[in-house]
Length: 245
Image (cartoon, rainbow, N blue to C red):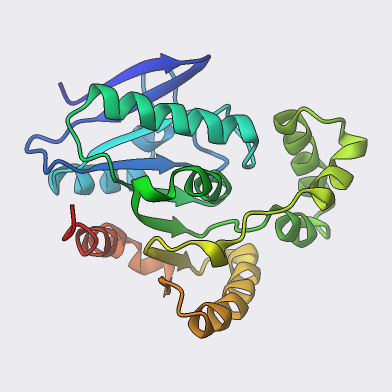
């Protein structure tokens, strides 16, 4: 069996099995285009994502992920479902209970929430063009009126708060600090488009702080035409963090 789809709560989930398992698992948390249904997922339908899945499988990794209520923007219930998925996989599959995380874009918000709950069960984390702060992301999108209105609507729905009140709620919510994380982390930032450029400015500022704090966080910048190297970079990084079981 190459893969299987199954339901937890109301959400579809998918697991990919390698031919020769190495005993380690990877939880993927996708961006806003991510989805899982009863037949497949964004990661099986998108050529670039499927290539990465196959590279990870060929390296022996058991890969799993969830629909996580669609465009969740780091909601508490999405974090709780990610935690339930972890517990289910550890109960039902033969893998080491310390897993790797790969999160893209919006998925970084759920990944940081999961890290806060399960830091001792996360072996390493790779973030791809991550949204590290919902407040900063909203501020960045303010000048794009159509996308900003759409974003507010998505966050309101996910957080189950009226649109008129969502900004106030986000302003009052204490965000998870990446500075407290002691899990090896690699941030890979693909430089494509204005949003990526604006995010890179925030990353540059944070990188100075992380260096001063001796945080186990490294940042790699990548040109779009080099994206085929992504799988190789990720595999090398996570293998470096498997020396201690």
